[in-house]
Length: 220
Image (tube, rainbow, N blue to C red):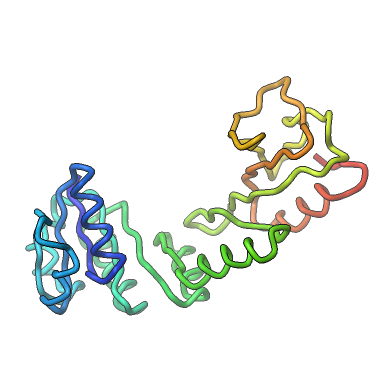
């Protein structure tokens, strides 16, 4: 696959090197040509100095044959503009934009632009290590209607069939048990220490957590 990366900072240069190592073709665009030094002498992809949302620059980078684009400059506005040009003018489906402002990230996710909210992602993971019992959201779909959450199953559910915990608005897609993940089957029972990965509608997440932690385990 051909991938266009706009922004050759630490993230962009790392993406570029790893994609080339994985056998993909890569074009990296950055305003400053000196930024390409981060790619190293062995980098075999294209290096293009220019503005990432300039249509001619993107064409030079091979966007017309690209399967994906990553907008990872240090500016939210630039990344969103680049992502929109790639999606709307060139029809690229796999477009990801790095966004520092969490509120902006939520807005653009609703518009169908996949984002990586750097500040929110980092703060959530730090909090999870400081407060391991804090409820975590692992993934949010581009429409912001469904999330994948990680939840430790309470002891009062031990012996319950895992699939009985599903509802119209939530599904347990995997269970981590003794360090290994399993896909629950019809006869899989909850064991002490199980951690579930659950797809839940955002509007029902609070109710799901309340039901999961109820003393009788009912509701799922």
